[in-house]
Image (tube, rainbow, N blue to C red; front, side, top):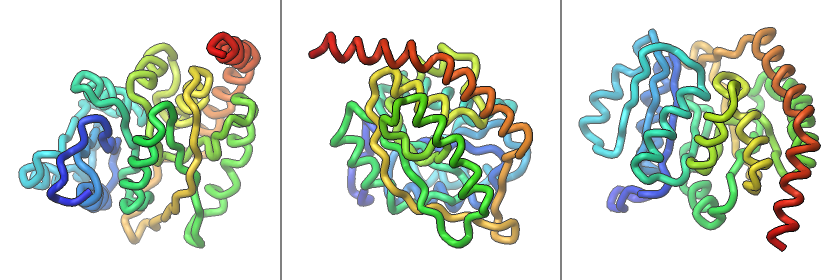
Length: 256
């Protein structure tokens, strides 16, 4: 999107952030070069990562910063941003991590893919470089297998990657109807349930970069806590899968 282009009224870029460190400002500044509007949801951050956003917001009317008083989790932050976006007439949101892991030059092509396929969600599938920790490369394989089982291999390439375009109205409806999907289980819960709701997934390869601590990299993943959460989520989703997929099949047969 060139600086002269009008900001989109259907698609916005949504960046949830919690104690993201100095990379947040760089991520937002780079994102504004490729898309407008950009919304940032500060999820009760206690560091100073959001300080530079106020100054950046003064120079760009297409940057909106939403500040939540306390940390509620990524899914909760996204839900708040989506509810406000829905009230302003937006239809789709591209989610992007705040820590610079996702390439900003993929924003436009991903948005265009969503515009060309309005009945779908666009799910980034990570292309790992040599900087990716082995735990990130292989630890997600089990979760990916379960997510594919829960959707009968409908096309969810990766169950955890955060670079995704979601339909806002259906996402808000789903997230408000379940108790979970507020923290590390957010990506898995929403993608699986959107498939159950009849939204077609389109998986696209997206490079991912991992920054070490010296480069400003921040991770809030807690191995035991978050893996237990995902295990619990998949167990519940698997129990619901036969009924949900049967309803989807009946609905499609009815349309035919």
